[in-house]
Image (cartoon, rainbow, N blue to C red):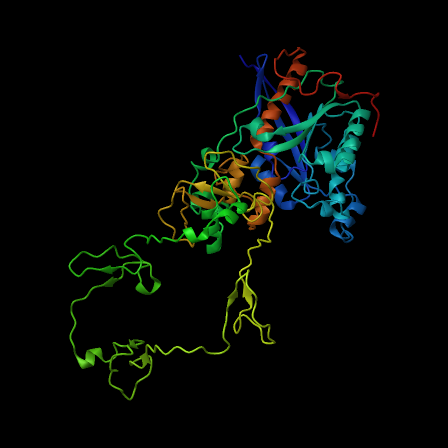
Length: 554
């Protein structure tokens, strides 16, 4: 019988919108008749909108704080900081928790400079090297803030490529942890397996344990089945449904982009377009309802009269086959507006008011003669010689175009990728968009009404290849469908690009919850003074890296 509850605290550094904090808050463990859970002391982030999101999502405090050293601020921003800017110190970290030492510190430092999405030349520049140094500075300030009573656990999360692009910085971090007595384990994990997500998300995780305070072992979380995209977004409202909130807007794409998505097979990307025989395809248009420009029979009931009914807009059956026709000069005087007269037939009466708007003064003239320069808008054959190059060579008056078979564009792998409905998603990234990643899905749910300016191009597999909405990307990350106040999950601001960046950069709550559960069990075993026997693999094994020297101050 549970007769008491133990509470452990956690501080989130570079906290983002609070995915990691939410996961820790969701972890609850029963041990020896006691229940344990985590409370969030706070989050620290430089982005004011991320801090506001953190508060709304976790109901915990967040502090806006720039952790750059002054020289790194200048290197990253290209200018001196404003007059009211001050360089953060360890005292600022200490004050953010009101002087309370957290049991766990979770750091998710900026990863853009380490990411493979950033070209190597840019990553090596002063700007991103300054951003990368936040990893070391953030940890150093944290250790200095609590050096008299260090946290039992420190968890550091980043992209896998930090092990190559940031190897020198990781060496500093490992040395720093070792000097103050931590043992640690660092390796890559699939957060999709840790949290049972609907995406594969490979991440670098370093877990540091302080044996002087926590000699109970932290175990590796049990791997879970990675789910399919459709299992997560299938139960959600269709895109543009207000029930999904402002983040559930369908991106408005150009018609040609919709066609390209329809031609890319599920599981493929832009590279598949090169292998398509475009001559084997044609477009089939299926009108909505009774049919655009539909002509209704005189002796049959009409279709429903809709608010958008209008023949001129070509969106409803708003015309009729009217048999009431009288050959009356007064009634037919202006029935020939914009009408063509056939070349082999006599013309109508020449009247005083004759012009194209109210008389038959246009004729289908078969005598076509080349006007202007021959070859206007001509396209040259790749394998044939070109005509003379003239001084007035322009596409509108000569053959100045060529059918070039060389596809020169080379977007990164995954661009315009269409993901299968029954397969796990690829990693949700901060730049999640069909033009930069696999940001589309083969949706078998064909909408009935597409009156919102969204094209529905049905692919050969019978599905709608469409972009994922920002709301759906958040759900693939494992965020809740609704906020604590009952509104659909949403973020502050009005920019989809900023929303997607904050979502893609954050820690998936289910993965954080799995890690927190194991940390909680170890902390509770330590509090109860018992040895925990478990068959699961030890995360930071005795005799592992770290704890090689006597503890010292940083």
